[in-house]
Length: 262
Image 1 (cartoon, rainbow, N blue to C red):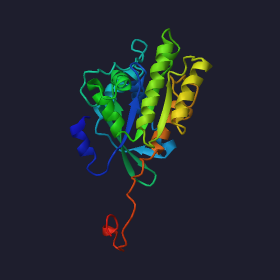
Image 2 (tube, helix red, strand yellow):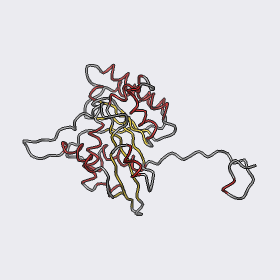
Image 3 (cartoon, rainbow, N blue to C red):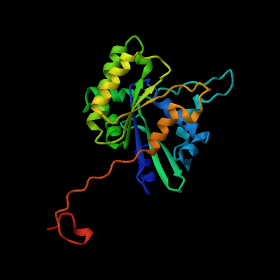
Image 4 (tube, helix red, strand yellow):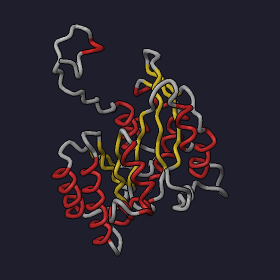
């Protein structure tokens, strides 16, 4: 979905926008595809939710198709890299979910290339960072993807600096919104010193940040107990920040004239 489609989805209710920040190849699109497959297995019922529709099923299928097991000749693969030439706003994947009280909520998940966030971290006003600024300004829930593969690789020092800079940038714009640090590919060993350094910066800048470990499911752990599903449940249970009303300085009994009256 694009900008022109959002108005149609928001006609009845403002959707909750879930912004996923992270470098290139961190696994942001794979996370979305994996969530879609979990929802397709009906696991939302254990979290008190049920699938109630989507205006972007084709998009969901596009990111999740490669993750499905077809046969031995066609094993699962990761989704294609999200192109940085796809415009100045991210692709949006829509879900409508319904809780046990039949209350429906709309969610929009951003799918943006990692290069945008690299530009945004280095220079928030960069023309190449326009898409990342859109995510930062419009998201209600912020997820920061930490690439365990990069943090354990040959250039782990550079990866650590870039991730810590991204966390600091998110801390500067979060404005009381829920934030989670997601350790992607957590089956790859990252040294305790590395994790402590990154978590330390995250908790210093965002004291109430949540942390989740996400990795390829090994088949022995129940899906409802995986970090992948616990993260999805946290996202669905999060709430939009409350509006801050100006102080009441009037004396009228009519609520329409309380603000700004004398």
